[in-house]
Image 1 (tube, rainbow, N blue to C red):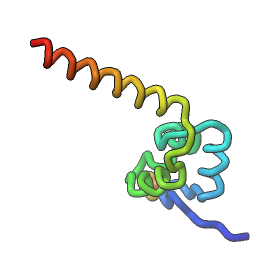
Image 2 (spheres, rainbow, N blue to C red):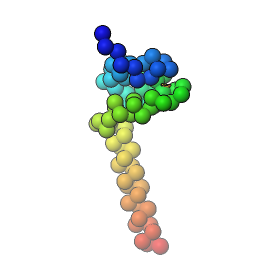
Image 3 (cartoon, rainbow, N blue to C red):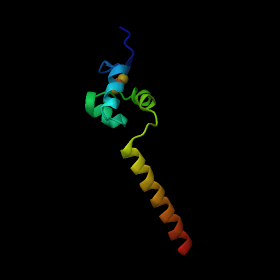
Image 4 (cartoon, rainbow, N blue to C red):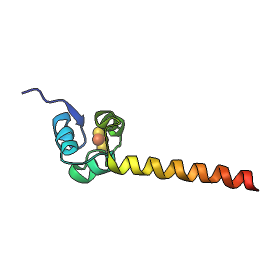
Length: 81
Ligand code: FES
């Protein structure tokens, strides 16, 4: 069996991160909640983020949309002033 460790602090493998992602975790924080990966030294967080990629995450998408709306609103407010 080929085990590629992502988080050496907690012995979390790439396979485990992918399984948590398949189960609905779509941010490093949610992966940390599921298996503690990334909560000690933090050196694996970028790797976890890379494994998660920019997949279709409803939470992230709605946050991006809110940010876009807030940015557009700020621009209009600046023009009105
Ligand atoms: S390697 Fe993951 S928290 Fe240290």
